[in-house]
Image (cartoon, rainbow, N blue to C red; front, side, top):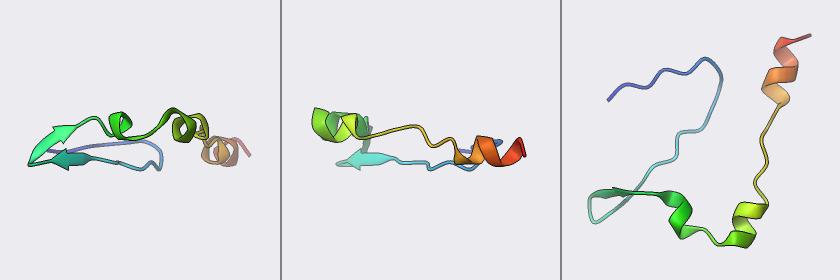
Length: 47
């Protein structure tokens, strides 16, 4: 498997008993609500 990305990012993968699962199924709504898009990279390339 190969992944190419133009900008820095985090690849987060979860497996349960060897099977890939959606990590979002394991986070509560309150934890997901704290997530925000990081725009620091985008602003640094426009300077």
